[in-house]
Image (tube, one colour):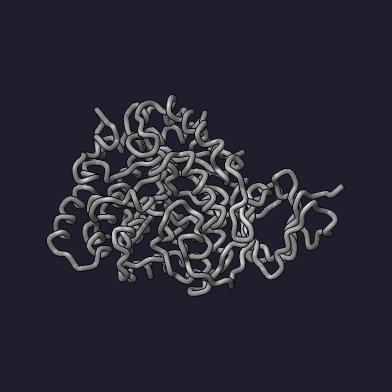
Length: 480
C-alpha cells in the first residue's frame, strides 16, 4: 500500500522566509506529511511531476467580495474556480448586511447561519469571512462572532458615513439602516468593542479592516472633477477621490485606533500619500498593530491608460508615479500583504455613468502572474517574498497560520505548481471567472499556475478548473 495519497516531485519549493529548496512533498489525509530529498514513485498513489517548476504555498487572498453582485451560491462556485486558476487556495470575503450580498439587515445571529448554509456547498477552495458591522446591534455581536463563529476580522467603510452612493439613494437606504449613522462616534464604539474582545481572547487579537477615504472631502472633490474633465475617465475618477483625502482618512483612523487600542488593517492602499500616512502612523503609534495592504490592480494598472467605467474601483486607479511608489513599498517591506479585492461584476450590471455605476472588478486569478511578472521578473522581488506577500503574511495576520501560509509538515496541503517563465496575454477566458470582461485584458504577464491543490486535492490543472463546489471548507479563526 502506498504511504502517501499524493507526492509532488522534482520541484523547487518556495518557502516563505526560507528561500528556494529542491525537495519532494508527500501528502496524506489532506496534510503535508513529509518534505524529503526524494520520495519514490511507488510510495504515492498519485505523482505530480514538477520538474523545472516552482512549488509555492497556496495563496491566501484575504480581500474579496463574494456574492456582492450575484447570488452567493453562484458567485462562490464560479469565483472560487477563478481562485483555483490563480493559485489561490483560501479566499477571505467581506460580508455586510444591506443591499447587495443577501439584501437583508438585522442580527448576525440570524443572518450568519444563513450565510454559512449557503456557503458550505458552494466553494471549490477553502474560505473565511470578515464581517462589517453596520449597526449598534451588530457591534454588540462582535464577541459572539469571534468566540462562537471564528470571525477574527471586522470591517468599517469610512465613505458610507455621508456619501450618496448611487446618485439618488443615501447610504442609509443602501445599507437598510433606520437608526445608526456610521460616523466617528460609531467607529469609536466599534473600535472599543473590538479592543475589549481582543483582550479577552488572550493572544488571539481581533482586528478592524478599514476602507480609508473621507466622504465629506469626496463630495467636494467629485464636483471639482466633474467641472474640470481631463478627457481620461480614470484620471477624472482619481481626481474625484484624490490621494490626499486617502491620507487624511488614514490619519483620522490612526488617531482613533490609538485612543481605543484597536488593531487596524489599512486596506487597498492606492497611492504614495496613503502609504506615507500609514508608515507615519506606525511610527507615531508604535503600540498599535497596523497592517498595510495593496491590491493587484493598484500594482498592475495605471490611469495613464483609460480603462473607462470598466476600470472603476475604490480607491481609484492612480497614475504611474503612485504605482512605482507602491512597488517600492512592496520591495522595502512597508506593504505586508497583496490581495485582489475581487468582485465579480458582470458588464450588464455596470449601468450608468462614471459617477453612478457601482465599482469593482475581478482579479484573484492574477495573484501569481502579477507578483511574479511585475515583482520578480521586472523588479527583482525574491520568490520567497512573493510567497510571503501572497500566502504567509496574510495567513499570519488573519489568524490562519500554521494551517495555511507555508510549506511545512502538518500544514494543509495547499500547493501551487508554477512555471515562472510561462508568458501569456491576459484574456477574459483565462481568468475562469463569471465576469465577462477584464480591465487587465491584453497585459502580458510571466509566471502562471499549472496545478493548484487544496488540502491535497487537485482543483486546477491543464488549464481547467477541476475542483467541485463543496470541497472548500470554512476556516474558523484563529486556527488551532
